[in-house]
Image 1 (cartoon, rainbow, N blue to C red):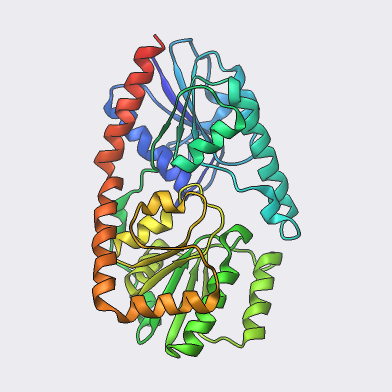
Image 2 (spheres, one colour; image 1 turned 90 degrees about the vertical axis):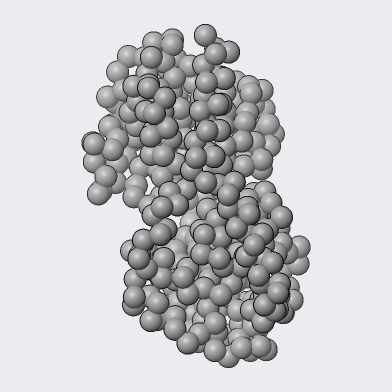
Length: 357
């Protein structure tokens, strides 16, 4: 029996790719023959990591194909015809309306992705979802097969590597507010910038904002953010762009507060990354975010930037509150340890195999 995984694009540093690679290790440890197949394999990854989907070969009814669904892909439509047992791992797809007027290409891709997800609603045997929010999304689409929640596997050992000294130096002497996530309309970096503006103006002129995440200079949304920063005349805002992992480690190591104003997340890995570095999290109550925090951090129902700035100031200044937040995040972090998620996946997969014999 083969247990294969399919993914649209596998790329270094991508959360869905990391999850796929981690699950491959678990599948191997269970004694099954396994490979990853992708429509696109991005360098430095090569055929040792994933093969083209065209090379899957013939599948038997006893084989299992696990499809990681996170974007628009022809795989969503081809997967229905696979002659084997089929599992979807749903990582969520950002609603296309977020990209209206900002990026028509991504809007189209995400629309296609949701169409593919809906197409598969009665064509797979089992689903895993990164979060309860994602599980409910599948139910709302009309999925009737069994659905369980399996958090993304995060390679925690990688975060113990040495941070870049220049990133540490860049942040030295500031109170550092950080957000991590690609520059995209659903992430609402403009709300992070607004809160930072008032924090810097009303409470702390020696504050720095680190917006870690990839972007293209020509992106409409990025250009709007730049114009917004110029209009407010804010200094000390850094867009890192796509950067080396050890730089990201340096920024997390230097961060005093992690501020997330995102309005759509299927899981939000950076919340867990912040927890690893004992960075107190302040986040807007949206989509999967409350589930990922699960009582840790501070959850906001109000996005008023003056109010958020006051929350930042209290977390920075109130040592008792800060320590309580860190302790809560450390407790929550245990739920995302590799052994815990690996054991959960093994149990789910074994149960699926037994009931579909």
